Image (cartoon, rainbow, N blue to C red; front, side, top):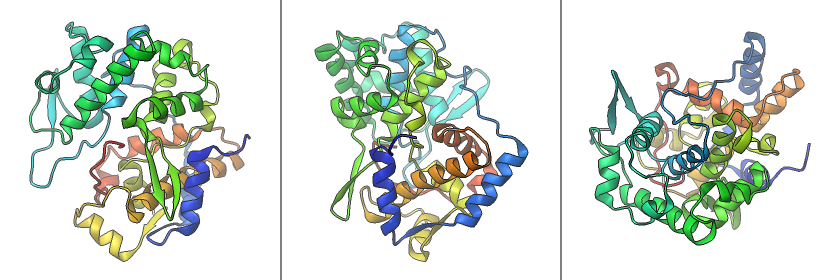
Length: 323
């Protein structure tokens, strides 16, 4: 295997210095063994809520989706954002995927760079619709406007050209997004060194791979080098499994839904230990003969996090555009 890239190496460094979060190796081995014995089922890309045209437009759609794929939890005491999609009620990521798909199908040009660059807050609110309200709406608008302008200025207005500039590498694509777009520049500082997470930049690469079935625009090499995507759902599941352990002080803050400050030592440790826990799971499964990649373990854990069983204890709440 190639040397660890910066997301893994900097996360590992944080893990070795962590004071608020730790990894229970025995619980990790137990879960890996359970996955191995039950047979690993990697979740499929959901065609139900996503645009599935298989065209250049789908590349643009996924980039728009991942540009505002963050912070779906409501402000304390407020109603969470929820939409109706056919006979279903959706919230969170799938609701966002569905409303953007609906916008494309209805002819709203959200996949066009010129339109994104000039989008207004009222237009964004109309596209989102539903009940309740997403936090950080103005930040979402700025992310989309920046995306549109960068595509116009550097890539002939085409998301596909940005993807092509990565020369077929998932790692290069993640780094390119972080270089060109500030909302994807997910880097923290911890004890005087920089820690790269690049959550949404990496997730865009994995989403392309999933949406296109690893072919065409989703034919990305180095996909196996991606880490998991450090958000707020994976730590919740890892805590439920006993793999991630919190100090008493941090556990109380999370359980009482007290905000954890972005870029604080506690928040960076939660995210770094999440990344390293998944990497250790990958290595443990590999030793058992299971060829499963970190982003696929992420998909497994994230899907587990959609069940009420894994949500008995709250996720940590950090107000941020990065996840």
